[in-house]
Image (cartoon, rainbow, N blue to C red):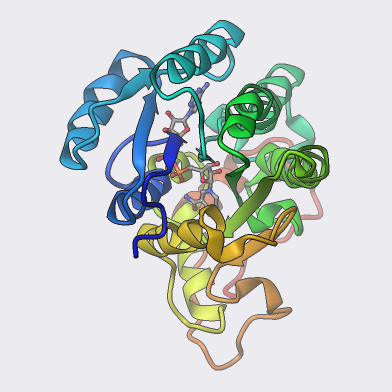
Amino acid sequence: MKLLEGKKCLVLGVLNDKSIAWGIVQEMANQGAELCMTYLGEAGQKRVIPLAEKLGCKYTLPCDVSNEEDMDKLFADIEAKWGKLDCMVHSLAFSDKNELKGRFSNTSMKNFEMAMNISCYSLIGLSRRARPLMVKAGGGSIITMTYYGSEKVIPHYNVMGVAKAALEATVRYLAVDLGQDNIRVNAISSGPVKTMAAAGIGDFNYMLKYNELNCPLKRNVTIEENGKTAIYLLSDMSSSVTGEILHMDGGYHVVGMKDPTTENIEIPKETVENIEASKEISENTKKPKKI
Ligand code: NAD
């Protein structure tokens, strides 16, 4: 039996075929889900519609989550077409990429507000609108995507680390608030994956290599694995799981120190240049070394 057979599912966050949401939505289609995919702007529409068609999904709608009217319209459309909703995938985040490098204390108020709004508040705004439709379905499952930079400081992750910490707290508060409606809310804390959003993070390739060498499974995760984990959380396989932050990171989060048996990796040239170019770096900061 397919795990999402007959389930009406909304997926926000596909940008291209590298997106984590693309890994998730493909697996949802394999598991029999009826899908609605959203896109951001005209550029998003051009990319998402051909991908949706590959899955036989003709139902795509625009949604910029920083716009309340867009969210209202999205759920009005879903109500008119389906009358109910079983699952929602929230796989989106945004920050000015200039603030995903350099000193965290330079985070601007404008970008802080934007990053928190798009990356965290949107889950609240979307869940509030999804609730009545999920009640009509007898309950539902909502998932979002987070990263370990919410728990520990990861170089360059900066404001996104704060936004992800707030997102994880939001998962817990929503899980309690919506539990009475039989709606479950969970997050997948994925290891690093090379996507468009990740490309904005300073030295992302270094992060990827470090993760691969030092996590217990000694390899990076894939969007297909995110898809399989999402099916567990979206389907009845996890019927008593809510408020959970499920790490899907090859075990990286349990490791407290670099694996001494793995090779050393060079600090990327870009980091060295960034540090040297920064006039604000402390006089006492030593030049980066091999670690
Ligand atoms: P991606 O660039 O493929 O997806 C990001 C999505 O966010 C895009 O579809 C984009 O259109 C959407 N988005 C941005 N601003 C929006 C707005 N205002 N309204 C609606 N949508 C908006 O990158 P991804 O890595 O697949 O990111 C998906 C999620 O996974 C994000 O929450 C990200 O933080 C999280 N995540 C990524 C990684 C990683 O290493 N790539 C690891 C852990 C968690």
